[in-house]
Image (tube, rainbow, N blue to C red; front, side, top):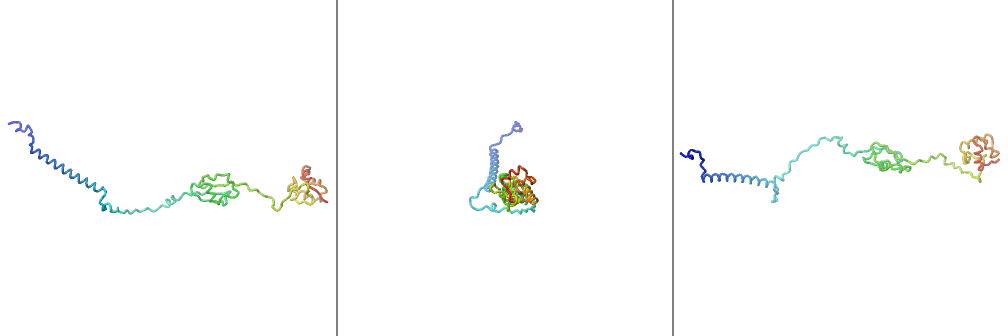
Length: 228
């Protein structure tokens, strides 16, 4: 008995066995190739554009609508959408001093416009029209000083010159105040002296009035006279 018969040496496959194995492997490769082709063709056909012009039922079907419910709105959310407001008090040289409501980012000129504009005596050079505003700010518009007229408009004393002398025995308080150095107090004293002691005999007698000495007499002597 030789080694081949004892099974110690593997007998090589015959030509027919080799051809059988190759046919089996070829069928396996063919099946795999067909399956892959079908899968690939389906994917390409699904996503490739339709050149036939006919709509794809799957694509033409509208997506189902979803009912979206909104929770009740918070009043604070609505307030947050409202532009911020500035409350500013405007006074001084404006037509209508008041508290005005302005949008955030407003300037002093906007506050003045909301308060009726500038008054006639407003000092426009004393403040900055382009200054920004802050909430609850008090804007005071500066003004020019207004002359304080205390003299009655019905009394218009005329200064007395040497050619138009004032009679001490007939002059009124207002007329006496036109003399240099004579105010309301001294003019009243002259009238009271005249009513008490009678008419002045000479202009020098005015020095007998309290508050009128030689210095005052020297100033007014060119402008006064007496009549009997």
